[in-house]
Length: 512
Image 1: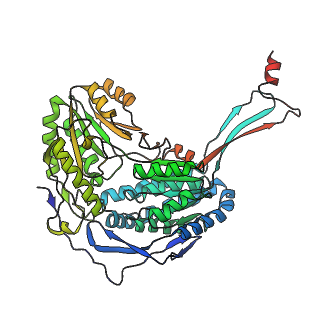
Image 2: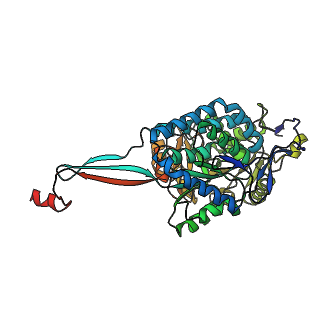
Image 3: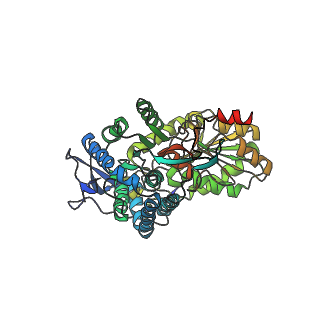
């Protein structure tokens, strides 16, 4: 039986705080006058706060504020913009524990993971602060004499930032930091499950010195707040992380206005375990990847593709270790697995358990966890299915919960085929002692990220993050590649010959 922990939690009362929108450097109420609550997923009786249910009119005001701030922000030298990002990173570092505990209370991930989430935001802020003094273009030789040729990056304009709830500090920073350092202004809509994390983040951004209107926060539902910026002719860039169907809808509507759109969507990530693998190490990596953040990561491992000779010893290790995982509030340092984000997520995971019981063999878990204090939260037992086929629904569809499918295969070639037989292509890993097979996996896995002898999670901010196929539309978060989503290239030619020179004409005549 999975272990649980109990705790007491403060309940909502008349002192529950109400938070505001941030537009043009001011905290303001929504013109619609409506609010919504954010609650603790580990205990739904704990109301974190009331937040503004933003409207299209609020979004229009935020876009206008961003538009008014844009000329001055674009004209600010990039190194100076980087200095503000650096100040923001310093503020996050000083407030790391406060941000982490607030995240765990609102989103549910265990405190160690929340600290990692905040650290990722700090890391990307420092990284992009440095881009203020780099932001490389190209300087190349001209084909003509006395002529200079180079390229530079320039901002596109207002960036509409739409973020999910599962990394409520890291992902907004992934998106906003490159947008801001390159000279764009931002209108930010966080997920409605985590508006408090977004508010705390924007408070620090204001304290760091971003000028009024450069960063604007509008909380609320996707239909009102998110769609308004997708449809707006004044927002030329949209960056979205979330559900695949929503991303496709955004892409279709944005295409009518030829907007720049960066999409980070679903994943169905696999770990390949070969017969020569270190099974104890593989077990560590699989458990962390499958049940960390309660499986609510786009990089979470939900498929383990195993050569048949080691299926049983690996499954024995996974079952034994998973039984010992502690469920409870992530604020308890002893807890391993926190809650799912909301009751709808519990229901969705439950529906896939029913499917899995038809397709595979239920080895462990399979039920909501309701013992003791857990009954007030959105908890689900870590679940393992064995004897799953590669094309079964639980082996193909993104569940976004603590559900792991074990898929037996005959050999390495069959493992590669099974891994690639999905419409997603975000992250994959392989456990093997064979260096030749490791390099084949690096080459042949159809994913944007590949790990060798590690799990499917743990991307670092200085390399590009993103996937192939329906995981996204080819853009990348993090690394210097992130700048591409928010900049236009401009090629510049300076002729100091004192005469008209015609490229591709005069140079050919001279050489002839």
